Image (tube, rainbow, N blue to C red; front, side):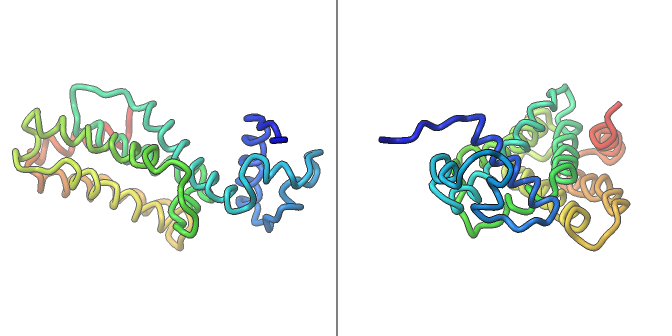
Length: 202
């Protein structure tokens, strides 16, 4: 007889595993359920074992990133919006540094690759709107520019969230994004204003 899956239990186990990562506790079947009143069978019921748990942790990182992106309301300034998405990416990573690290651990597959790809699509759409409004060159490829923007955000936050550099390293973000966007055709003065508004929203 199949065991009934409880979404609340699944969430509790994912949250507990994320907490254990954050506090550098070793995660095993027994340590994960210790003090929860559940048996180790709960991990098999909801994740088919520890490999499934790690997949769920990876997915949770992208789920939280997607939720953060949905808080960015599109405006009539797509360059500002693209910058705001990169800034949101950084904030999400700094708030969940251990989940962020697991997100890109390809030792385990994602549960839903499409949902993960959808996070990048937020940036692609902002880049496409910037091209459509003639902020970027007509031959700009939105996916390429979105990827380059993601690379800037990922590089910066990787050096701060789990790396050796201080948080002030993130202050280089506006300069890097302005350089990228002006290279794509945006006017320098207008670009700087948009990037500043996106990076430091009122």
